[in-house]
Amino acid sequence: MKICIVGASGKLGTYMIRHALERGHEVVGVCRPESVPKLAEFEGRITVIPGRTDDRDVIRRAVAGCDGVLTVLVPWGMAHYASGTAQAVLDHAEPDARLVFSCGWHITRDGKDVYSRRLRWFVKVFGWLGRVVRAVDLDDQVEACRRIFASDRNWTVVRGSDLEEGESQGLPVWSQHVGDPILASNRTRRVDFALFMVSALERDELIHEAPAIVGRETESARRHTPTA
Ligand SMILES: NC(=O)c1ccc[n+]([C@@H]2O[C@H](COP(=O)([O-])OP(=O)(O)OC[C@H]3O[C@@H](n4cnc5c(N)ncnc54)[C@H](OP(=O)(O)O)[C@@H]3O)[C@@H](O)[C@H]2O)c1
Image 1: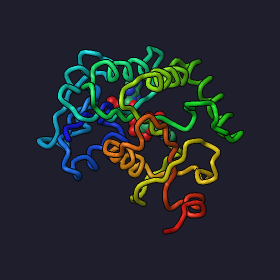
Image 2: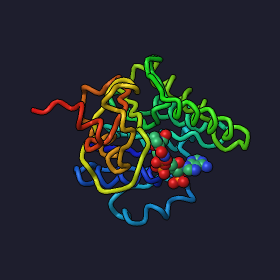
Image 3: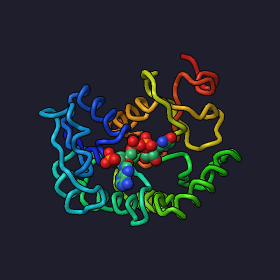
């Protein structure tokens, strides 16, 4: 597959590049011009298109001819970066391309997620603080996902739990709603979040789903995953 990774130079992005190359995909990466050096280890193995991820012209060039697009949705700044990025991908990706977006558990598709007091408190305080210092706009990430959910493209929105570094534990397990018992451990290795994103490109059962994921070796996943 030829795939584009939008937001390629971050932690999630670089893990996704590694997984994609291991699977034999051809990779085009988009990242901010100042972050191009962060992709030095992949020189000669991927194509890098420098530019802001909400720049429609950059995205149009990057996704041309791609069978899949993996987008890291981040709520940085107050200039609608996340919704601008999502809209550019929705508008310019090839008609049948698989589109996979990342976000956190705070995004809800149908309002049926049940959140812990800790998560609600975190979103409230982090969202408020981010707006006050004009550094983070969580509402814009919500708007980005609203547009994706309303679209008839072949999308998947992967909702990550709290993340940690560490060796891979394998493909995370998922559920439709935060609050489902299998997700209670609320912990996923970042490398496995990336694995889920890349594997979603080839999993048709995830089209038009917003899987909330958790590490497969966590206590809640072990307790609630049926054994064969
Ligand atoms: N962190 C968590 O605990 C957590 C939990 C659940 C879900 N998630 C989701 O996981 C995904 C990756 O998050 P992450 O925290 O692990 O970060 P990450 O992978 O390191 O990615 C951060 C991204 O944001 C970009 N960025 C940083 N500062 C920016 C700015 N001022 N303006 C524009 N772009 C900027 C980075 O680009 P450069 O390389 O150019 O700086 C990079 O592409 C996100 O979709 C997030 O919602 C994160």
